[in-house]
Image 1 (cartoon, helix red, strand yellow):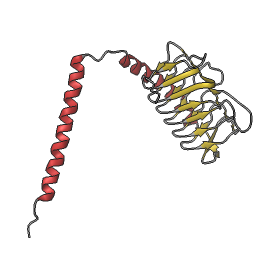
Image 2 (spheres, rainbow, N blue to C red; image 1 turned 60 degrees about the vertical axis):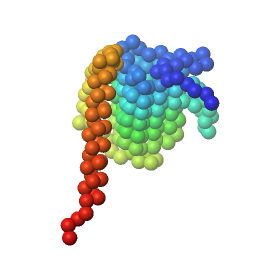
Image 3 (cartoon, rainbow, N blue to C red; image 1 turned 135 degrees about the vertical axis):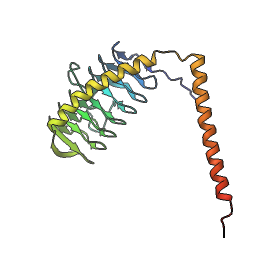
Image 4 (cartoon, rainbow, N blue to C red; image 1 turned 120 degrees about the vertical axis):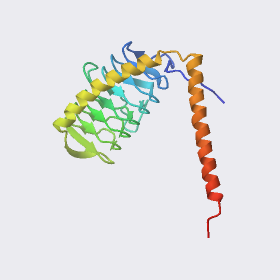
Length: 227
């Protein structure tokens, strides 16, 4: 059995992550190998960015939300091996992904959005200000034009992006940038022994309250009902 101690940033082979000093990477995220994370971007809790077989580039101002997976392939059925690129020019304000998105050997341009639990496969290209709906599957080598919303399995054109959605993309990028700064500041704090004891006491108190509730429910169920 091989055991691995979790490291947020990890080299593999001769490849090492390159994370901008102004980016936020949650402590439970995993960034391995040839991965670049740009200025002001945020990689949230439980995310995996594995650049062992090819490169991954996350541009500036992009948020990769909790439990998302970014990976690349050394080879695939089409014989065309591509990196994963989020934010085509790596410069400017992007939005990014919803929770639990999967991006594999694809390109997502600036200000595009990949919805919660969506999957974008090898060779797919999501153009600027396009949107992949939650739960969608974008098949290999699909190109989603700028300003369009695609959804379904396999993903297909649904409609045009609305002006409200365009405004939401911009405001959400700013909101996530500020939120990332707050999380980054909190993660720099040391949890001293006193704070730790307070947390344990609160947890034990909640557990005791829960046990009491279960006990009361059990007793009430065993009480014979009046005839």
